[in-house]
Structure formats: structure tokens, C-alpha cells
Image (cartoon, rainbow, N blue to C red; front, side, top):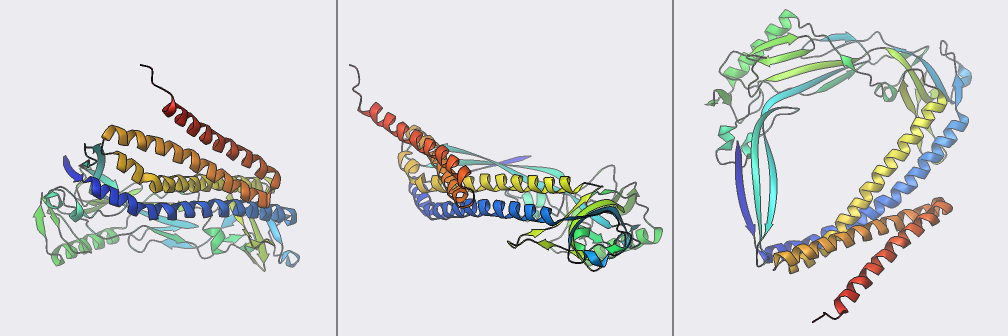
Amino acid sequence: MAYTETTTTSWFSRLGSSFSGMGIGLVLLIAGTVLLWWNEGDFVATRDALNEAQSVTQKVSDISRVDPALNGKLIHASGFADTQDVLQDPVFGIGERAIALQRNVEYYQWVEESRQEKRQKLGGGEETVTTYTYSKQWVGSPVDSSSFKEPGGAERYANSVHMSLEDNTLRAANVSFGAYRLPDFLVSSMSRYEPVRIELAPDVRENLKKQLQVGRRQQPSRVLGGFAATSGGGYMSGLQPIDVVSDGSTIYIGPSPASPAVGDMRVTFRKVMPADISILAKVNGSTFEPYYASNGERVSALTMGRVSVENMYGSKHSSNATMTWIFRAGGALLVIIGLKMLVAPLAVLASVIPLLGSIVGAGAGLVCTLLGAAWSLIIISIAWLRFRPAIGGAMLGVALVLIILLYLKGRGSKAAEQSPVAS
């Protein structure tokens, strides 16, 4: 099931677009530079805050009573997080005594995927061949089939849903930690989910089926490929009777779980049960709040299981380093993309002859990559000179090597052009 669409862009249109894109390229270059500078400062600020917090953290081994002497102190403690709250899903009536109850909804839908192939034409034009393919998949939200590209695809691959339902997470309001109460910001960090065995009450099942029948009568529909599709929201249904079936850890909404059809839904539940945890937090009476270091950075953590204070801070430092490298890569990528957009008109000008355009484009891409990497290292190095001079100096040395390589490459290319050709 594929549909191919071919579009042609003239050389003048491509040239105009490339010049228009220079403004975006400049914005990306500036944004990448700012991100790189901010990221280095944030890394140092977070590291300093963690070091400060660790130096004042008080280890608490007994949380069976509220200790007034700990009020206002940053503590590390391990213990059992418990609750008596029963969380109940408002739609399916699934109830569990748990820290958290999560509902996940999937829809069986037609999905459009595309793949593009660009071809340069003599004279600078560009031909784009886009291939659209269609397949049925389980997805996390309904897919609007009215935007499908294939002519008649909105009807041929019409999507519908039996009912509108969203993912949902319920959390216990009362979670104890020894004699203390865990605040929401710590409760939300408990993430050791496990499947919920579903036992759908007969009255709930019948009520859901009645709602589906009401939705069927209220929604005007037209039959498309054996199923009903409407342009409205709310409930939709097909020609076959829609059932609500619970099987182990899944609720299936549709005619037959063995043969999924467009519009069918499956709902699963997961829960977080009372468990041992370890926390880093500031004591506030009988509960906790985040600790703020002298530089204003926030420090708090919750880890599943009984984990030492050293390992918790080690994990925080590791996470800080990982996020810093992710942002470094993101900032450098923005810089490189911005530079490529700034020089894009050169490749378009040369693409009057496709081979020449490809050569110029590849060369400009390589130069922009090296220049972008050098520029990123310079910004990071200057930032480190501001925060940590020794490391910043070493990084400036690496950036200087890249700039020298660019210079030598330019000299080599110029020498090759000026050398006489043997007759």
C-alpha cells in the first residue's frame, strides 16, 4: 500500500529558499552558541550545588519518629514508603492500594509514513519523489486520516475510534515514610511500575457497553470499508457489536481481540506499590521540601531501594555529566546546521550542473562541520576559562588544532588549483 508523489522545484525557487534560510541559519547559530555557554555554566553550578549539599547532608537512620532537631536540615534516609490510599480509575473502576496507578491507552489505526528521495536536474532544478506507505499499527493517540496524502486515502484508510480516552496517572495523596509524610514532588519520583491484574466488574463492563451503544446512535456515520467513520469527536463505532473484554492485564474494546480492526482499543494498567526508598531532602516539620544551595540550585532526590548517600550523590553527578554532554552535542549540532544554512546558496548556485553542485555541497558541508566543531569548542573553552581555567585552556588548544587543519586544507586546495597541468 504505497503512493508516490513527485514535485519539482525550479532553480530560482531553490535559490530564493536558500537565501531565506540564511536568516534561520543565523538564528540557529546564535541559539547553539547560547546553549553551549549556558550548558557549561549550568554544569558547574549543579556540580557545586551537589558538592555543597553533600557536605551538609546528615545521615538519618531512624525515621520512626519526627525529630524536631532535624527541622531545616538536609538529610539522607532510607525506609519504607507506604500508603493506605486506594486509587480508583474513574472510567474502568480498577482500584488498587498503591502509590500510583497508571492507565495507558492504545488505538489500532491506519498510519501514514513517508520517505523522500531528492534528484538534482540539469539547470539547477530539483525533483523530490515522496513515497507514502500505509499500515495498521497500535499507536498512543488517534490518527487524523483526513490529512493522508494519497488521493482518496481519507476514505480508503479511514480511521475511527470507539471512544475518546486519554492516558491517566493517579497518585496517592497520603504516603508515609516512617513518621514523616512524603510530598508530591517525591511521590512522583517513585517509578518502579508493575502490571495490574485486571478484574473488570460486570456492572462496569455493561455500563461501558451501553455508553458505546449510545455513542453509536448519537453519531451520524457513513460506512467505509466495513467500519463507521465520522468527522466528529466523542464516541464512534463499527458495524459489528463492540465488546469490552478484560484479559489478564489488558482491557480490549472492540469486536474481537483475536482480529484487531481499525478503531479498536486496548487499555493496560500499571501500579507502583509501597516499597523501600532512599531520599535526599530538606526536613520541613513532618514532611520534606527541596534543598536550595547557596547558588540557588535545587537539590533533592528519591531512589528506589536502600541506597547509600555516596551512591545517591554519585548518581546525581553522573546524571549531571550525561545531560551536559547531551546539551553539548545539541548545541554543536545547532551551530553546524546554522552554518550549513548560511552557506547553502553556494551549493544551489553551483547546482546548475548537478555534479558540481554535489561537490560544492559536500565540500561546504565538511567545512561547516569542522568550523562548527571548532566554534563549539571555542565557546565551551571560553566558558571553562570563566569557570575552570585549566580545562578551558586545554580545550582551546584542541580548537586551535582544528582551525589550523582548516587553514592547511584551504592552502592545499589553493595550491592544487595553481599547479600547472602536464601537457
